[in-house]
Length: 59
Image (cartoon, rainbow, N blue to C red):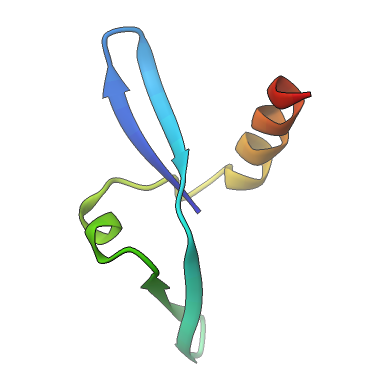
């Protein structure tokens, strides 16, 4: 999962560590390994593509 923060030049993305919790129907609970991360804004759609782009930049 990625958090997103706006800065003067655009968006800054940070990988957040989570683990899956309980699930029911189409809903999934997420458990934050760092409780402070729960108060951040998150990437909901496109995280797969964001991860691919960030990995390309790291090569």
